[in-house]
Image (tube, rainbow, N blue to C red; front, side, top):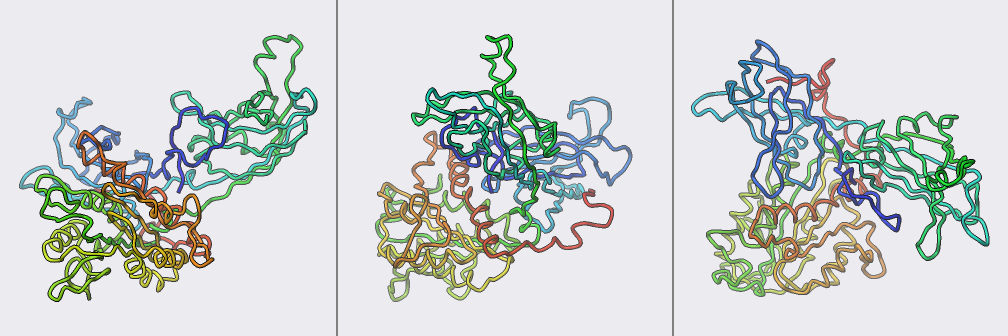
Length: 550
């Protein structure tokens, strides 16, 4: 899933309009409630986000006002709901009776069946405070893409020896009055009356869901040296463009400098909208709402290069006062993914150790000691199994990845529909020993509903991991290329907060390693023509599609 967020003015060089930190989508939170707080990344401070209206004299209020939140799959977005009984017109919350509160993450709400979550209210010792029902609904304007085509007529000639080579640059306006580049057309060579190819862009990238927000379009003459000549500009809006081909969508291209200098200046040509087609895209949240489960498996490196776990120099050292790098990586990724798995039972594996009682070397052992049932209860259960196994196994080697990749691939291979998607997190300290076999495993797994995250801990060089990542060159094995990029590698040292703030380290790490998952998920489903299941009927009671109550 790509994004809708807020870059400063970008250059018109090469860029990816969707790599900005635009939210994955916007969701509408319906709460029978009063005050919503959100929490900043890396600190514990709660900030008030908004308040519902006041509803008189009912113990089961059903509020009309909604909260519109930006949703990021890759972030842990903490929410707090405080409920009050209003006693006066004062906006000071301390003047009203506190009725209870509930905490959750936006991912928990989105990951609940039908995007509807019930939580008991707490906050008053010894008192039952009732229940809050929170429902998340994806806003339709975040699911729409638009296909547009433009042509121009009689553009200014900029090249001394010939006609211009024009292209268009589109900018969306931001809340603070700045502009962010969101699309650039191809260059049409030597033509003052160009017709550009049709292009497709998410509506949120074009106007962030606000149909009346200014869209600025600049017209340039391409130059080989990168010093493109400005021909002129015009402004429009999504609402205006949505009228399609008409007299309203013929725009005069104005060069302000020329206009100021020349009294008889009319324009530097015109640009005309030729076509405008809206397409509603299936999103990641459609699958989650339809019941798709994200299955999370963790595999931890128990090779001897990690150092003796009883020594403070070891990457596996269990410091009573702070988490080691393995635990931070596991918690950072796991705490976000667990919101999308209804049973919260996660297989946890280890590799590269000698196991009791006979000292056999294993590259695929259950951290909880039960090979028939390697599942742990929640991320806390995985952490506990990790700490226990450190006490019982002997760190050894070599560092083989293929057994744990094949382990998850066996499960993923049995899924032919949208019901499940698998994510394998491998945390490792070092140089891989079975590179050829691992490449083959990844190429095979690229055809399956799975993604692989590799977090490298410690000071080692991770050149092989970068090769597995496949961002620069698609990974191949024996002449066969991976069908899609399913591996994301990051070195943990890049995310360590040097003030010692582990929460910030975890937030940064999770953001980077999980950002590609929705796109990897969608690319798998789309290439196979697998559509999301419709949401169960209980998600939309007749006549009350968004109703909630306490």
